[in-house]
Amino acid sequence: MMSPRLGVVRKSMLKDPLIIKAPLGKTRTRGLDVPGPEFVFGAKTNWNADGGVAGAISSWRVQCRREHPARLDFVSLNRDAVRSGLVTSKELSQYRALRGGATRKTRISEPSDGGTARNPQAAPDITFGVTNRAPSPLAELLSYEYAHKWFSEQLSRNQSGGHKKQMKPGHVPETRTSLLRRSRTLPAPPKPLRLPQVAQVAAALDTFRDPKARR
Image (cartoon, rainbow, N blue to C red; front, top):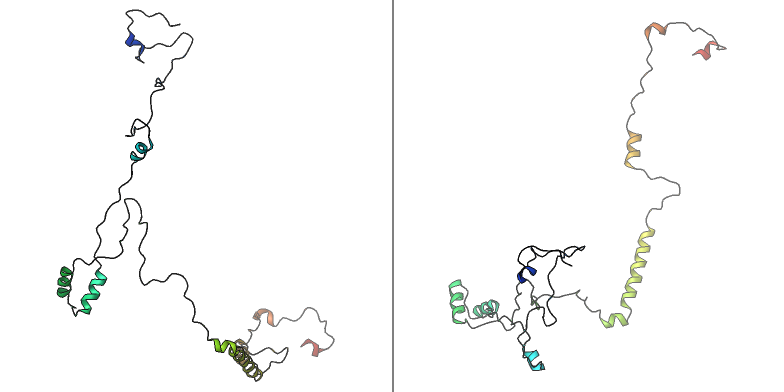
Protein backbone atom coordinates (compact mmCIF):
# COMPACT_ATOMS: atom_id res chain seq x y z
CA MET A 1 0.00 0.00 0.00
CA MET A 2 1.53 3.24 -1.11
CA SER A 3 1.03 6.51 0.71
CA PRO A 4 -1.20 9.03 -1.12
CA ARG A 5 0.64 11.33 -3.51
CA LEU A 6 -0.44 14.80 -4.49
CA GLY A 7 -0.18 16.09 -8.02
CA VAL A 8 0.18 14.35 -11.34
CA VAL A 9 1.60 10.83 -11.20
CA ARG A 10 3.58 9.75 -14.25
CA LYS A 11 5.06 6.33 -15.12
CA SER A 12 8.58 7.74 -15.21
CA MET A 13 8.24 8.61 -11.55
CA LEU A 14 8.16 4.89 -10.69
CA LYS A 15 11.73 4.49 -12.04
CA ASP A 16 13.32 7.54 -10.47
CA PRO A 17 14.95 6.47 -7.16
CA LEU A 18 14.76 10.03 -5.86
CA ILE A 19 10.97 10.09 -6.19
CA ILE A 20 10.02 6.53 -5.30
CA LYS A 21 8.50 6.34 -1.84
CA ALA A 22 8.79 3.41 0.52
CA PRO A 23 5.69 1.30 1.17
CA LEU A 24 3.78 1.91 4.35
CA GLY A 25 5.46 0.18 7.27
CA LYS A 26 8.54 -0.89 5.25
CA THR A 27 11.96 0.55 4.65
CA ARG A 28 13.02 1.84 1.31
CA THR A 29 15.02 -0.64 -0.77
CA ARG A 30 18.47 0.36 -1.93
CA GLY A 31 19.32 -1.71 -4.98
CA LEU A 32 18.97 -2.20 -8.70
CA ASP A 33 16.73 -4.54 -10.61
CA VAL A 34 18.20 -7.86 -11.69
CA PRO A 35 18.09 -8.35 -15.46
CA GLY A 36 15.92 -11.06 -16.95
CA PRO A 37 16.81 -14.71 -17.52
CA GLU A 38 17.85 -14.02 -21.11
CA PHE A 39 20.66 -11.67 -20.01
CA VAL A 40 24.19 -13.09 -20.29
CA PHE A 41 26.90 -11.77 -18.00
CA GLY A 42 30.46 -11.33 -19.24
CA ALA A 43 32.00 -10.59 -22.64
CA LYS A 44 30.51 -12.16 -25.71
CA THR A 45 32.63 -14.49 -27.81
CA ASN A 46 32.56 -14.48 -31.57
CA TRP A 47 31.50 -18.03 -32.27
CA ASN A 48 28.91 -19.42 -34.60
CA ALA A 49 25.33 -19.50 -33.40
CA ASP A 50 24.92 -23.17 -34.28
CA GLY A 51 27.03 -24.22 -31.31
CA GLY A 52 29.25 -26.63 -33.26
CA VAL A 53 32.70 -27.80 -32.23
CA ALA A 54 34.34 -26.10 -35.19
CA GLY A 55 32.86 -22.77 -34.22
CA ALA A 56 33.90 -23.16 -30.59
CA ILE A 57 37.47 -24.13 -31.49
CA SER A 58 37.85 -21.33 -33.99
CA SER A 59 36.75 -18.80 -31.39
CA TRP A 60 39.59 -19.57 -28.99
CA ARG A 61 42.00 -16.71 -28.52
CA VAL A 62 45.52 -18.01 -28.98
CA GLN A 63 48.37 -15.74 -27.91
CA CYS A 64 50.69 -15.09 -30.81
CA ARG A 65 54.35 -15.93 -30.28
CA ARG A 66 56.77 -13.09 -30.64
CA GLU A 67 59.40 -13.51 -33.28
CA HIS A 68 62.75 -12.16 -32.11
CA PRO A 69 65.52 -11.63 -34.63
CA ALA A 70 68.43 -14.04 -34.32
CA ARG A 71 71.56 -12.55 -32.78
CA LEU A 72 75.01 -12.58 -34.29
CA ASP A 73 77.39 -15.22 -33.00
CA PHE A 74 80.40 -13.02 -32.25
CA VAL A 75 82.31 -15.93 -30.70
CA SER A 76 82.36 -17.90 -33.93
CA LEU A 77 83.04 -14.73 -35.96
CA ASN A 78 86.06 -13.81 -33.84
CA ARG A 79 87.37 -17.37 -33.90
CA ASP A 80 87.12 -17.58 -37.69
CA ALA A 81 88.71 -14.15 -38.04
CA VAL A 82 91.70 -15.11 -35.89
CA ARG A 83 92.13 -18.32 -37.84
CA SER A 84 92.17 -16.25 -41.02
CA GLY A 85 94.93 -14.03 -39.59
CA LEU A 86 92.84 -10.94 -38.75
CA VAL A 87 93.69 -9.49 -35.34
CA THR A 88 93.17 -5.71 -35.50
CA SER A 89 89.84 -4.07 -34.73
CA LYS A 90 89.51 -2.67 -38.25
CA GLU A 91 90.07 -6.07 -39.82
CA LEU A 92 87.60 -7.66 -37.41
CA SER A 93 84.90 -5.08 -38.22
CA GLN A 94 85.41 -5.62 -41.94
CA TYR A 95 85.25 -9.39 -41.48
CA ARG A 96 82.00 -9.08 -39.50
CA ALA A 97 80.50 -6.85 -42.19
CA LEU A 98 81.50 -9.41 -44.82
CA ARG A 99 80.17 -12.34 -42.80
CA GLY A 100 77.07 -10.59 -41.51
CA GLY A 101 74.88 -13.64 -42.10
CA ALA A 102 76.59 -15.75 -39.43
CA THR A 103 74.01 -16.25 -36.71
CA ARG A 104 73.59 -18.53 -33.79
CA LYS A 105 72.52 -22.06 -34.46
CA THR A 106 70.42 -22.21 -31.33
CA ARG A 107 67.75 -19.60 -30.80
CA ILE A 108 67.96 -17.67 -27.57
CA SER A 109 64.60 -17.40 -25.85
CA GLU A 110 64.24 -13.87 -24.58
CA PRO A 111 62.06 -13.13 -21.57
CA SER A 112 58.58 -11.94 -22.32
CA ASP A 113 57.03 -8.87 -20.75
CA GLY A 114 56.99 -9.34 -17.00
CA GLY A 115 58.56 -12.83 -17.04
CA THR A 116 61.74 -14.76 -17.51
CA ALA A 117 63.01 -16.88 -20.33
CA ARG A 118 61.57 -20.38 -20.42
CA ASN A 119 64.69 -22.11 -21.74
CA PRO A 120 67.71 -20.03 -20.74
CA GLN A 121 70.89 -21.08 -22.49
CA ALA A 122 73.64 -22.17 -20.11
CA ALA A 123 77.30 -21.37 -20.58
CA PRO A 124 78.96 -23.88 -22.94
CA ASP A 125 81.98 -24.56 -20.68
CA ILE A 126 80.15 -24.89 -17.37
CA THR A 127 79.97 -28.20 -15.52
CA PHE A 128 77.16 -28.82 -13.06
CA GLY A 129 77.56 -30.98 -9.97
CA VAL A 130 80.65 -32.38 -8.27
CA THR A 131 83.49 -33.60 -10.43
CA ASN A 132 84.44 -37.24 -10.03
CA ARG A 133 87.89 -38.13 -8.73
CA ALA A 134 90.41 -39.90 -10.88
CA PRO A 135 89.82 -43.67 -11.02
CA SER A 136 92.18 -45.82 -8.96
CA PRO A 137 94.42 -48.23 -10.90
CA LEU A 138 92.95 -51.72 -10.87
CA ALA A 139 96.33 -53.46 -10.53
CA GLU A 140 97.12 -51.69 -7.23
CA LEU A 141 93.69 -52.51 -5.86
CA LEU A 142 94.03 -56.22 -6.65
CA SER A 143 97.55 -56.42 -5.18
CA TYR A 144 96.52 -54.70 -1.90
CA GLU A 145 99.05 -51.96 -2.54
CA TYR A 146 97.14 -49.41 -0.46
CA ALA A 147 96.80 -51.84 2.47
CA HIS A 148 100.54 -52.55 2.53
CA LYS A 149 101.26 -48.84 2.36
CA TRP A 150 98.96 -48.16 5.30
CA PHE A 151 100.56 -50.93 7.38
CA SER A 152 104.05 -49.57 6.71
CA GLU A 153 102.97 -46.06 7.71
CA GLN A 154 101.53 -47.34 10.98
CA LEU A 155 104.70 -49.30 11.80
CA SER A 156 106.94 -46.32 11.09
CA ARG A 157 104.72 -44.11 13.23
CA ASN A 158 104.89 -46.54 16.15
CA GLN A 159 108.68 -46.85 15.89
CA SER A 160 109.18 -43.10 15.77
CA GLY A 161 106.85 -42.62 18.72
CA GLY A 162 108.84 -45.07 20.91
CA HIS A 163 111.97 -42.88 20.89
CA LYS A 164 110.15 -39.99 22.51
CA LYS A 165 111.03 -39.22 26.09
CA GLN A 166 108.40 -40.68 28.34
CA MET A 167 107.16 -38.48 31.14
CA LYS A 168 107.09 -39.88 34.64
CA PRO A 169 103.66 -40.15 36.19
CA GLY A 170 102.91 -37.25 38.47
CA HIS A 171 105.68 -35.07 37.04
CA VAL A 172 104.59 -31.60 36.01
CA PRO A 173 106.61 -30.18 33.10
CA GLU A 174 108.28 -26.84 33.49
CA THR A 175 106.67 -23.82 31.91
CA ARG A 176 107.86 -20.31 31.23
CA THR A 177 105.86 -18.97 34.14
CA SER A 178 107.35 -21.45 36.59
CA LEU A 179 110.88 -20.70 35.40
CA LEU A 180 110.39 -16.93 35.74
CA ARG A 181 108.87 -17.39 39.17
CA ARG A 182 111.96 -19.25 40.39
CA SER A 183 114.59 -17.09 38.70
CA ARG A 184 113.45 -13.58 39.52
CA THR A 185 114.13 -11.97 42.91
CA LEU A 186 111.06 -11.29 44.93
CA PRO A 187 110.83 -7.83 46.53
CA ALA A 188 111.42 -7.62 50.25
CA PRO A 189 108.20 -7.39 52.23
CA PRO A 190 107.69 -3.96 53.82
CA LYS A 191 108.28 -3.65 57.52
CA PRO A 192 105.29 -2.95 59.73
CA LEU A 193 104.77 0.68 60.56
CA ARG A 194 105.71 1.65 64.11
CA LEU A 195 105.03 5.05 65.52
CA PRO A 196 108.01 6.58 67.35
CA GLN A 197 105.93 7.74 70.30
CA VAL A 198 104.84 4.21 71.17
CA ALA A 199 107.99 2.35 70.16
CA GLN A 200 109.76 2.78 73.56
CA VAL A 201 106.70 2.32 75.75
CA ALA A 202 107.11 -0.56 78.18
CA ALA A 203 104.70 -3.47 78.08
CA ALA A 204 101.78 -3.34 80.44
CA LEU A 205 101.85 -7.09 81.13
CA ASP A 206 104.78 -9.44 81.47
CA THR A 207 103.51 -12.92 80.58
CA PHE A 208 106.76 -14.45 79.29
CA ARG A 209 108.56 -17.00 81.46
CA ASP A 210 112.06 -15.95 80.49
CA PRO A 211 113.64 -12.96 78.74
CA LYS A 212 114.61 -15.10 75.73
CA ALA A 213 110.98 -15.83 74.86
CA ARG A 214 110.26 -12.10 74.92
CA ARG A 215 112.42 -11.63 71.86
